[in-house]
Image (cartoon, rainbow, N blue to C red):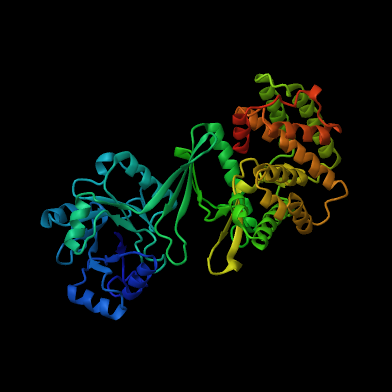
Length: 529
């Protein structure tokens, strides 16, 4: 049973701007099953609740109860459920507990002004539960409440603390069993049979623990709090995360915070725990969307991706050093060659030759146009792009957001375009429908349309960087144990033709022997770097 158990009405809380009838209607719009009004030092009588039910027109099955919020000198604000009369301000939580042993006491928004608690303080001897999610918390405070709940395992609730600024029902509490009265609700809280309503999903991450948290119900607008927690174990990774967060902040300040083109917003930085808290983006990746899209929808989605990239390049923010691109490329290309050599792959000599040739060509490209470098995403591909819509009923609210800015670097603009094309071909290599409806050249065409003239040699550079990205994909497949796959052979042959000016031959060692059916199947299921 989903309830809003922390809401203030303008009728009985001077700090509230929302009438009680609107509280009920908003909760219904969030698909909740009831509301508990918790005005300051005031408990609605049954007669008042009955009159409110009639005037608001809510259905009979919708639960309407009243508790109260009490300002205590020992524990701050406390929600009290099933204490008959209104309780005076300044009454201690201990006194409330002694006077109303059957009531439930919940510590309200305790992380509003304080983040550190000992285990003995949560919830404490006089209190039955702790409100860990609240609109009266920052996202950092909400995440700290979640962390303490997992660590200390107390009974937890959520509450919007609605006053009119945040929609009612944003932070609901789930009860394990139906309740029909304030006494039953108090008993369920005291017995620990409730919890905040949210989803917590652990995601894959390199050198970090990534947790996605989605709080509350979709409701009519499908807008609900979504946060991503990125926890780092090494100081070097944390410092790199701060650099990435700084880039996201800069892009947001330059117009990527709203509208059609976005990056996830950085909400909090917790240096003590080496944690970045960022906005979660609702939607589907471009990869997922294209697999089911119709012709017009898919073309629009691919066009949005190309226009996002062109807009980034046209901003020309210089947030990384000019030497970083070649330094990073040198290390990566050397890493590819070592990986092939480590497994004694027949293509190792070819990869070593390709790595050297790629590095020399990149040095020439940068040397010819040292001032033409732009801030590149660095890992721009369909699985790192999310398409969403602020309102499901209004296509004009559609947007695209680029994730994972950790590889952002000042580089030739053709690098991002070529990288996308290589990964696009690879990710959809077994989906003939996608490649037929929206061939890779369509992305390049849309990018040129949005970015304007990039010079006569731009297409040649795109082809070069697409071949270079193929080395990255091939190296990753070797890491997965798929070095003998047809995909690796194809990628190395393509790279040799573009970079070395000749197709790879058997003498290069890139053409594998006949593979088993199992090897062919594993190659088809491979992931991307």
